[in-house]
Structure formats: C-alpha cells, structure tokens
Length: 294
Image 1 (cartoon, rainbow, N blue to C red):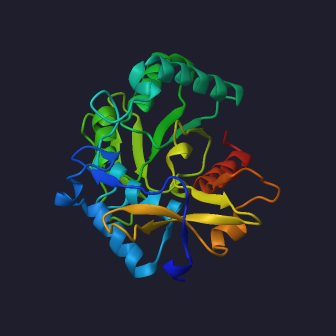
Image 2 (spheres, rainbow, N blue to C red; image 1 turned 90 degrees about the vertical axis):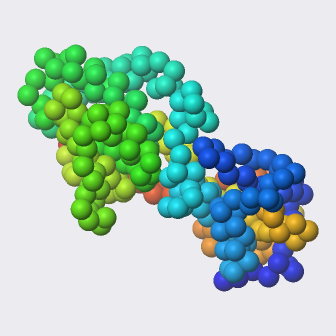
Image 3 (cartoon, helix red, strand yellow; image 1 turned 90 degrees about the horizontal axis):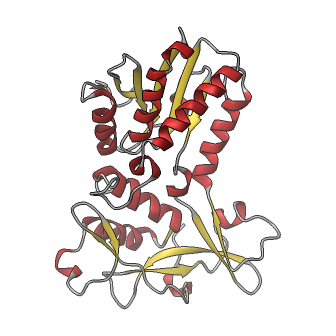
C-alpha cells in the first residue's frame, strides 16, 4: 500500500542519501556535477518511489546491490587491489588453506563420509575456494576415495565469470535454460566438479560443509527507529527539495516489517532486522540437522 508523503516526516539524521554510479564502483557522495549524468540506478529508484511510495531500506539495498541490470554486485568486480575493498582471502592464501585443513578435520571427525560437498555462499572471485581446494589436492591421500565437489551460491553473473576463471580456467559451461537450478558447471584442474546455483535450496542433499565468509553482513536489512511510544520503520524517499536526491524518512504507522520483525523488549534508538539472511540461516540449519550434513 502506498504511503502518502504528506504524513511522512524526515529522519533527523542522516538527512539525505545520494548514490553516484561509476564504471567500477558506487560512492556515497554528492558531487556538484552529478546531475549532468544521473545514474540509471538513481533514475530507477526515483521512478519506483514516485510510482509506489517510499521503499524500505531492505528493498533499497536489494535494488542497489542485486538489480539484474544495474546492481552493484551484478555489474562489477569489486574485490581485490583494483576493486573497492579487500577481504581476507585476497590478503593471504593462508586463510583459505587453514580453512581447508579444518574442513578435512571436520570430515574425518564425521566418520570420513564417502561424499564431501563444499558449499560456499557468496564466493567472491573464487579465491577462498581455490585455496581450500589446493589443500584438498595436497592432502588427497587423507581424503582417499571420497567424492569431493564444490557448490557455489552466487546471484551475480559477473562474479560467476570471475569465479569460473579462477577455479576452472574458463572451462565452465552455462546452462541452456535459465530456469535450470545449476546455471553453470565446470571442472577444476584437479578434476573436481564445480556447480553454480542461485538458491541454496537447489544444492543436492548429502554430507556438506558450508562456508559463508562475509556473506550475511552484505545482504539487505530493514531499519527501524524508536519513536516516543513505538518502533517505526525507516524508509527511503525522494527528497522533496531536490528530486535528484534520496532521503531517509520514518513511516507514520506500522508496516509489515515493523509488525513482524521487531523483537519485544528492544530499547535501542535504532534497530536492524535481517529477513533474507535469516531465511538462508534457517535453510542451512535445517540441512545441518539432517543426517549426513555438518
């Protein structure tokens, strides 16, 4: 249901949010000449908000990060020295190699199952998985005849290209049908099968070890602000004084998110809730509770 802006007040701080898109990154800034080439994402967001009303912070983040046309994660390779940020796998291979040793240790503690599925959520450019698999190759005598496979959960076509290059040397193949749960597959130099999925639920059942390095903290969240009496959801709206800018506002009444996600007894000034990560957590937990999964 659309919310009338006449009944929505602006959040005191921060007052506005301005996004500028460049070839390889998105900045939170407000340059004087940004209107000369207003980014398509900003145009998309302003059109969406004008048509349906203010959107939640979660919806805003979802559009900015994973929109199939102009989303940040979909269009860019933001990782590494030439990207926007560096994570531990890019700093040193030691992190992934130690993780590989730990995975084999857990597999041994589980009774050395004949099948070992390594499932990574948000695999970045594939560096972490490559380091883990390198250890698998070095400790092949320990793994013995175990059937090892790699399963990657990735929604970004651009990042899956980098992952395929890192892990298979560019020898992967894309599925003929977009509806195929496995939208890409290939084989590493060591002969291990690699499969790409958009949804965790599509990964086959079997003994699996899950890796989600810096995954949940990059997904959309709902934001709430404590008023005098109740919690209200913080939304994103077009700035009435400048249609080329966005601003945070507070919903005048309850929303579905504020009615279902805010925990009773929380007294902080600002509260964040993670609906999508929670669903992924639930899916992982359900699999962990089943036999043959860890």
